Length: 65
Length: 181
Image (cartoon, rainbow over all chains, first blue to last red):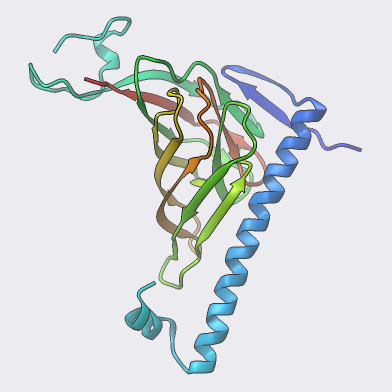
């Protein structure tokens, strides 16, 4: 069963059409994937720091952000 | 400086001395409804202004996350990067190439929505640029300045704001135009 969503066009709120639901869910999946990718990069960075024996603060001193 | 045609004095939000032609003019103010997954503001952009500011304040979201921005009905061609730092911590950058929207423009949680973005040339038949500082309002979240461009030359009149997950309720979307002259 397709999830329900409400969309707002200016001051009017209505149920999303099936096409809009698909678009909302695709957009939210893309956002989730990007957040997960950012998290994965942070984990990979921390793994490198751990191998080098550096704290995050030391890494920022050496490398900037 | 006179009041631009079609506006009242209350809509001129930045007082400027006579003879200085620079101001932001309120174009629209939209109150976000209850538990919506997206909000589209129609007729936001026109030939009157080349460049715009969009501010979102107040309201709440059902989940901690980001607020994204989409122009017109375009769902491809969004290129953006947001270099960010976790509060008191490490880098947590986000980026997108040929995405379906500018994903990480604003922040949201149960205590408020926030977006402050400048749009360059959305109505012109040129690339549209965005410039923003994303501030995510969770204690273990992130902040950072970012931007991007939409890789087409479509002229837009409308935009849509959408949460990265869940829904948003309340708050106000205000659109301002930068006077051209």
